[in-house]
Image 1: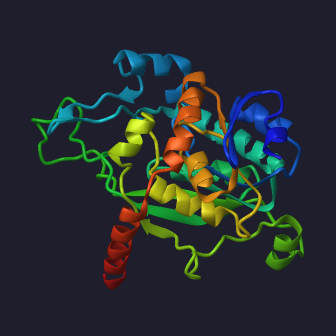
Image 2: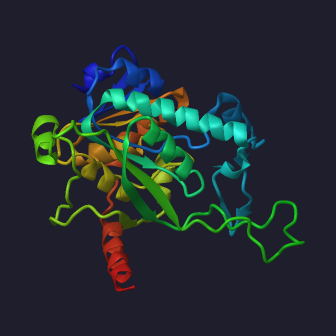
Length: 316
């Protein structure tokens, strides 16, 4: 099945997953309708920052729309896109991008299939609205509680003048939009599960429902050393999401913006079927090498810490 979804593109097969070098807009439009059971992805939110000229500026250390942060405490932060620098025209471009992308998703996804889409607090309202206009149902948000290094900065070029002011709050969570391709009229979730193997979310291994708030770690150093990508997500998080995305534990997940391959690796680790689509050759090559290594990462140590943190959260 996964080989058929590769069409005539360059691809790399793993045990239960496959990486494909293609533009996701073209790929989503070419595969047969209703081919995918779920989508789990972290798209380029500013869109502009992944244009070829902006990537070249980042590699040269010139910044462009990428904020090149200073080193501190002996650590150097990875470049981050300056989402707040987007003007009205660029915001309209983001709206068009996700509206058109959503329409392609509507073609490729089975009725009842879910989309998990990583976002950020600043642009999520714009992106989510565009996806709803494309035809997807907004089903809520999955909140990843993680202290990031976004926000909290003093006014640019006026840090000394306004030392007690921050332009935006320091980010302590990451919102993921949860969407669903509409179930056919008058069809129940049970009927959708029987017909399309979609419609709901898979419960946790202990039988509890998948929760919409999860305490998360930042991506560990050992995983960043495997795949040096600015937006790589931790395996301890991604394995939870890919499991939830297939309610019956069967079907095909797609990550149309594969990047480092963390979604594909999470599915590989759990023996689930998944295809990752990547437009940029260097990122595709990175993922092709990183997926097997990330799939072997042991996340049990964080799972224990996460359970303790979540129990503390319930007491608040």
